[in-house]
Length: 121
Image (cartoon, rainbow, N blue to C red; front, side, top):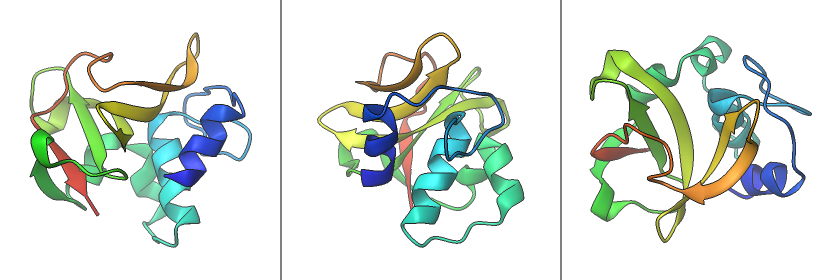
């Protein structure tokens, strides 16, 4: 989580498909943050937010802890997950949002389609 916070505070820009060190998309920020913490996910997994779903233990939103992953889906299904972020605590998240908004510290409900559970590594 410290890595993601550092990137957001540095106001790094969003670029789709990037995983750093100077630009990120949503799954790229998650991939780089967990890689910096020593977790070795295969590189191809970072390209698809829904693939993280299979690598995590699912926990209800009421039991989220800082560092857990949040998933956003168009239709509430795994195969329509379109966004991923890192839970920061107190209903907030670290995310790479969009080209217009960049990397943000924002409310977990600021993006539509929050799945009813997070993912814990």
